[in-house]
Image (spheres, rainbow, N blue to C red):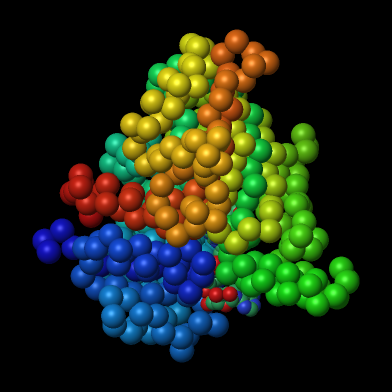
Length: 347
Ligand code: 25A
Ligand code: L14
């Protein structure tokens, strides 16, 4: 394949890294050499890609010789340190962390919304947005185009996989331990400060990073990243992010106020034609998006579409997507596909 590139995965053993591997396979992404990097802890592990076994190699400053596309998901501090090194070695970095998202000369891309921005990457780094933001803007961009959104009020219900592979394990073990009768103080709480099994926690991420106004960094991403991706700094967003004991897929209760009136039927019609969206909205038949259906799939599911009767121009929606796929690995690989399609001379 003439379009094939050398691909390197950074954080290959993590929750998102594993999804990179399966999505490259599922989408038949054109690759030449593929390499799998993680920390020294993972050296000795093997990963299987397209039926072949590969060793996991340690990420070092010398890792990037000859790589053309780098898919990064090993956390913000690793990205800050290694993305510029890879980019300098000629590798186009598609970064899942928050390290570069708000930098002016780094595009923040959701292909359904602003795919054309991939050509605008002077630092050889493209940022993949926050998972909750991605699914929200895929659902809201077509409504914004039709009726101009002035204000968004959103509450997220986020799965534990957003906090990585060890968080998934923590929920699994805690659930079993609580059912076995263990008390709060006997539970392993290495990732989450409070028990996450049988609980709902209004704080993401797990380290306390509330700003002066009382918002978490995850909450501020929904404001700042939405404005950047939509290219409209006039959109107002207010939000509460909640961790729930779900393994995969984030759910969001979204309320919007628009400049022009949109009926629920009009919104449903617009969303049923929107790229990346699947409308599931037959409440009388008890059909609406569910995290357990969205896990392992690609679309952003939208349902419970109804008018907000408290204001003249408002709508309520329920938006669900797999946070490790559309919220992370799938979106990043769609960015890479967008790059290949446009084939800028650099890559
Ligand atoms: O730093 P941040 O931004 O706060 O990010 C925190 C975590 O969020 C996940 C990811 O966790 C990250 O570490 N994450 C990042 N972006 C995400 C997104 N968009 C996201 N989650 C969801 N959506 P993870 O566990 O899923 O993936 C971590 C991967 O990064 C590799 N890594 C870590 N440090 C590294 C490194 N790679 C290179 N150099 C480093 N210094 C990590 O590889 C994994 O691939 P690993 O070898 O460190 O981990 C292999 C397995 O070991 C377990 N583990 C991880 N940390 C520890 C550990 N075990 C014991 N002690 C530890 N401290 C993991 O379960 C992993 O499977
Ligand atoms: O900004 O813990 O991409 O659910 C994604 C996962 C932030 C934390 C990001 C989580 C991270 C979030």
